[in-house]
Image (cartoon, rainbow, N blue to C red; front, side, top):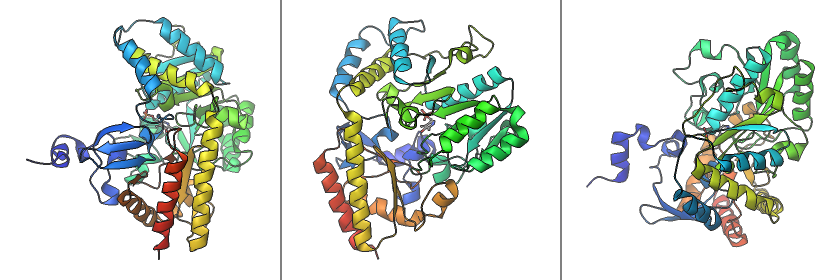
Length: 423
Ligand SMILES: *Cc1c(COP(=O)(O)O)cnc(C)c1O
């Protein structure tokens, strides 16, 4: 009998349904997950791992979170899709618009990719301009016009410029270095009247973790306002992750449009984009910008998302995640220092980046200068000890509320051992 991995490769490209699930770059077979609870997942061989991937962001409360599961189970009995409007969606839209400062109105879609793609279309329809600015190393899903100088899996697999994307599709996409305000101002001085929007990850979490420098986001806000272009925050990762109101709440910079995904589906497929009323009313059926979806506002995903967000409002989730994140980062920093390992550790709250580099990492270029090989060694050494990190230096390490103090201490112990034998 052939293994799952052998069977997988015969029927799915690379044996996976999304390239980031492939462990090819670390020379391994992918993990085939059998089940997951809390901070741990178990693979088909019965191997258990402490999970720092957390489904790449959605699972802020960890796996199989009981309160969410219960609500979903109730909801399933009422029907799984209607293709018609529900009160549930209204309630969810109310919840989202109350939570996220820039949202006056919102449209639900089925993935982060759809959210960013639709927000770009809307920005172009609203401004009647064609050019957009994105930043190198930011990943905004896999739509044609945004699949250039991108992060995440595309960068891991050496194709930040994808085959199949025509030069025509990206001719109006201007790519600038992250954290480079001067470059943005220069481009606006030249093309300002033609630029529909800037799209940015307010915290770049798809090239490892790169924080915005002081004034970067405010600078984007200023220049877009001046030239009547829109500012789009892609908060698919950061939304409800770094604060209840996302990075825009954390940094006090309010964009015109916001894209959401991941956490707002509570582990089910979802996306959303929204913003000012006058912009959102350009969308069909009210306005001329067309965008639709058979499963959009799916009751199962909305139920899971709604319960997740409701629970996020309670307690001190963000304080807790911040102190857990700090604990892990400070712990690793101390270990690296004591062993003389050159490490840059970045992070905001529950998001952490680890770069094997001597230089501070604040943009794509510096990310690429960090040692990929050392990160991969680090990954493999961790996996041997039952700790699952992202298998690529261009992804973010996620923690959830399910990661206990004991889990973090265990992790630091492993890191201490791993870096002990580093040289
Ligand atoms: C994951 C991600 C996307 C794409 O979302 P999908 O649901 O995978 O299509 C877009 N933007 C950012 C910042 C993301 O992290």
